[in-house]
Image 1 (cartoon, rainbow, N blue to C red):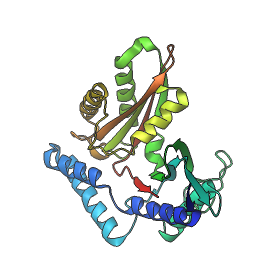
Image 2: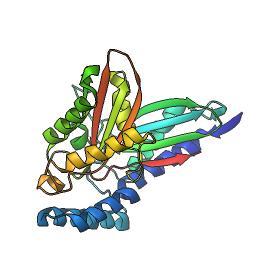
Image 3: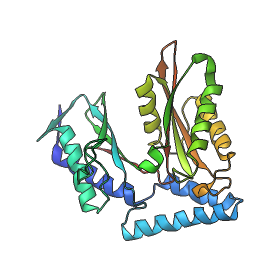
Image 4: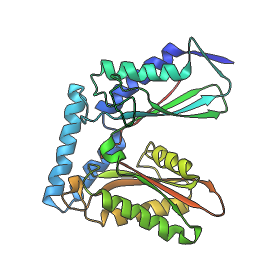
Length: 280
């Protein structure tokens, strides 16, 4: 049984909060740079080039890429042979977020009650998804999610008879309805299967995968390519000002489902699509 002290976890989460908010991921930066070279709209091209300048300034000056530094989403894989010492794991994860947002001078955006509001003052609690896995490691994926894009997602319980055509149409309808609100070019996460809440989690987790990767199933890899082409054909464009680049990538995650259902969820992320991974 391997032991891991909570202070190590706190320090790792703290740093991921800062890094994810201030340094654009390589895959996203590369996709924006490539899109800027091929974009036919002069306005769209200017927007894409400005995003790169903004990202470079944020990295150099250690400042947030965007003023909305998000609500922290944590995907945590806990090895069943690992023993956490020195405190509670959930409290440690939240303490890491607390320190990261304090030390990184990141905006605190979490309210303590969804209706009565009231800022918690430290961007906690984080939304934490746990998974018990074999081994003795702790793997954490930190994903600060801004709500300009989060507000544009949705879940739909399709009938099985609607099939892949229904999935495609729901994704396109969701992206089209979002328009400029999620700060395109976006990354679109799609969760298919499971139950209503499982599909939603899958769509969020899909956004933590590099857009340079494809779904390991060739069928869904092809569906990712088809959806990206159709989304970019909508003409929303960078910043919603028109052009060829509405989305940088589409990632799909799936799970078995009930014979009577076809749950589909779409989570849209802005051009930043922040996330960091660590293994302890």
